[in-house]
Amino acid sequence: MPRGSADLNEQLVRAVMTYDAERSRTLAREVIAKGLDPMKAIDEGLARGLRHVGTLFGKREAFLPELVMAAEAMKAGLEVLEPELKRTKKRRTARGRLLIGTVRGDIHDIGKLIVSSILAASGYEVIDLGVDVPAETFVQKTKELKPDIIGLSALMTTTILGQRDVIEALERAHIRDSVIVLIGGAAVTKDWAEQIGANEYAKDANEALEACERLLRSKLSRRESSGEPR
Image (cartoon, rainbow, N blue to C red; front, side, top):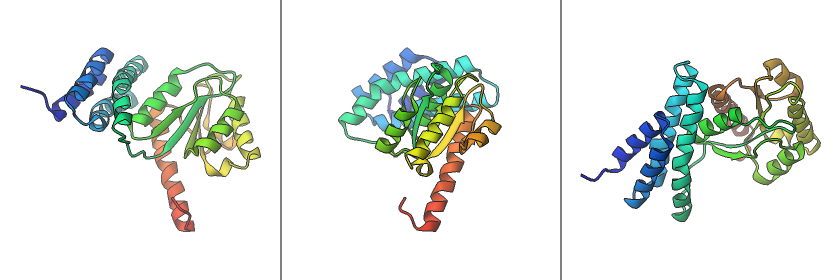
């Protein structure tokens, strides 16, 4: 009996939860072959699976390697489904746009990738600039892409100064007030966030998601009260 959309979506959830990238890729191809909705496969399959693993991670019932493997399984399916979305000109309605990168001098990627994956799974449009990103690139991309949030990652005490450099560069460009700045990384603290003028510090991906939700609600509320366009 041929499998329908709901059954395939459930199987995609399980593929991500069991860290099976090849299975995720195979099921995504089956979604396309059967002419099913790729957007639903992403939202109700891949993304739901990663959100579940993220919840377990937040409860300390799953660990960092498992979260990384789940994110890789989700990405394997996305690599198949996203070109189909573009071909059919379908778009997911994003809850907000996040521009994220690891600051100049730092090449650590894992934490940033997890945050990117969790937020993408939760409905955010995520633009990942990669690692060792100069402050000038954050400014240029902020002007070009107009994100709601900028995420600045830094792992080491020697590179967290790069987060301050980005905020100062945004101020010099007169665009600091147009974006929310969220910082994170092993060497980063709440005190450091306050010191450099970041909007928030998040210690992990679940805190980053909660912070984005809270800060965007606050931003929207301010816009509505001032009569600004959304």
